[in-house]
Length: 415
Image 1 (cartoon, rainbow, N blue to C red):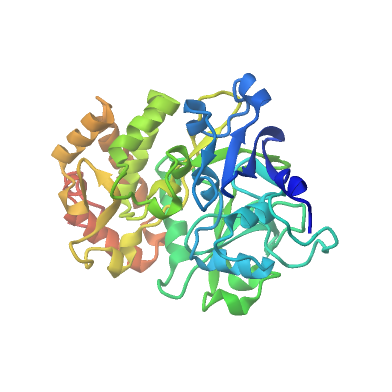
Image 2 (cartoon, one colour):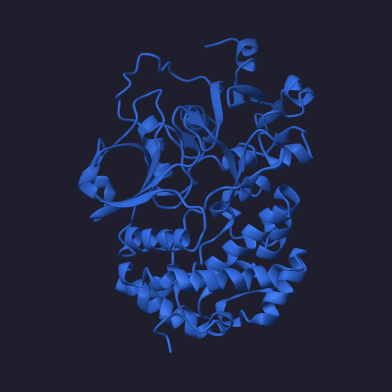
């Protein structure tokens, strides 16, 4: 057993773009505390770790868990991906400090975590191809960070990072990869920044036990926009920016962010042009019938300055394509967050848009939203034939039932 004095020196170094920004270490009560590096603070927090630290660089601690900002880097607790990685590494599912330690080399953005927070067996002798996952991706479905070579997807070796996110659908919802790919293609055609993506057969995946992948016959591969060649691009999702736990990504009773308040957040962080782009993307969320645009499906990207920009669009899915998330759901189709004091798609009329713009502090917000809808509607005309039938049918109904969409003339073929 190691001496107590030696154990007290254990900790995790936190780096962004290879610059040490702080450390994670156990406090006297055993909780994991993040403390910013003094030299980094004196250098004006360059490069930035996150919006919340620029606002308040004080130490962070969350009783019994890793600090919230870092918790958001990990696969969400209770998901198949979280369980699978913990099983592979012999970790207790509640031991997120150990999970952060083993996944620290391939986290979202340009943040890396290294060191030894708790006494663990030395892994230095493990072979690079030991088959255990060492990447971290948030979300409910199975996701893998992989390398794409031709038509083959493979897991990175130890020390490497993947450049493509591969999303494996569950058994509950049919055609998820096809619907998401069609939604992303629509967003791109409407003028939004989107990553490259492609639907690929399940047999294209190498090094993963197919028995763990359910009945999927294809996957969606999306190029990572936080990886460029041999460099990393730093980012943080909105749950991190607001220091809200992943489990509260749809809001909590004591704290419920809205699209209105997020529009203000983006204005303050990115400026007016960033706010305009955010409002245009909210218009796409409404137009595509996406009920899952929660806090973790929006991100800031960081460059050399202390003013971030919005990342490309991601996790864009026309969820109304499935009856349980569409107009057959109890109470009708709903947004993930409130817009103009309502979540119900059926209540989104021009008065809601005006209220949204007012609460967002965006005098031109209504005009931006409507202009985006016009471009989105026009873009659909050239893509309708490529979308799965379930998506086409659901969208025609959706554009008939959402007042602000119907006022635009509905989708082609809806009247």
